[in-house]
Each structure stands twice: as C-alpha cells, then as structure tokens.
Image (cartoon, rainbow, N blue to C red; front, side):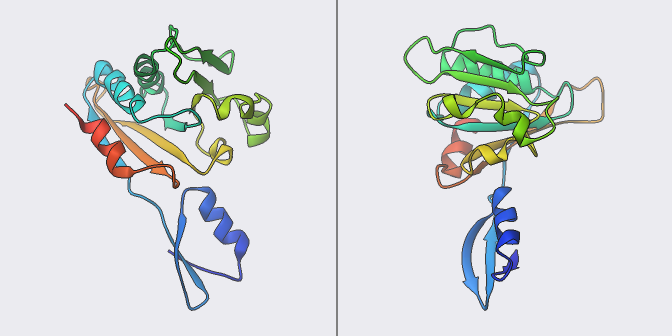
Length: 194
C-alpha cells in the first residue's frame, strides 16, 4: 500500500492497525502488514490446545486482541492460554466484571483477561487501568478489535471464524503477529507443532 508522506495522519492511521513502513519512494510511504497464520481447530479441545501452544512464545507485556462472533471460542482459547501460562483458574468469561487477573503459579507472567464487548471506546478501556499491568502480564482482550489496538503496536491479533454448518464445531483461527516484537515464523511453528 502506498501513502503520500504529506499526509502523516493517514500514515499514522494505517500504522495503528498494524501496517509498518517498509520503504519510501517518490514521496510515498510503502506500508506492509504481515499475513496471518491460519490454523484449523476442529473442536473446543483443539481451541484450548492452540491457546496452550501460543503461551509458549509469550512474554510479560504481550497483548492479544481477540475477535470472533459470540460463541466462536475466544474464552475457550483463553482457557488454554491460562493453562499454558500456568495461572490460577478457572478461566471464565469476564463479561460482567470486564476484567479478571489470573495469577501465575510459577513466577511467570499473570494473565489479564478482559472483555471489551460493552466498551465503546479506548477511553472506556483506559478506565480499566490496564497500563498498570500491561508490562508485567500477558493481556488478552476479547472483543478488543477497534478498541484495544492503541494499548501497544506490538500485539497479536486473533480472529476466530466458524463455518456455516451449526453441527460442525470447526473453527478457523487467524493469528497475526504485529510489530517488531514478533517473529511470525516462531508463532507459526508454535501453533502448528504436534
């Protein structure tokens, strides 16, 4: 994608959704966004396993912005993430409390699990004071697309889709690592390991 340099707010807007400057040519900025890693999850256990696997490449300060329709498996994925991080549970949806902190059992990062479904803006998300724990915990924000991206440019975007057959539990999980923090190949290897 090419964006003119004389529109810095346009460049900043695209960078806010994960595009990074790759080159400058003739007063245009070439922006690029990494392709997602796409993984099939045939059932709830596979969703939990994906969360557990991703936990192996996470560090304190990492942010995951999860999206998908109601019942897609965001909380199920987070349960696996919590198991992989070895945090206190049970990991359940924080819909009514907006945010839950699951403490590490082994000195690793805590898991901060947020539900932004009822939040309408980044300002409302800021009221949860996530910045206080963002550098020390792994933070997963369900329904965070369009709200949580301003927390950090280095993040993982997780998008879960179901098929149209109501009798088929298969989910397609797109994992897009954004920012300098991430090595896409390492994320892909962790998600697809046997």
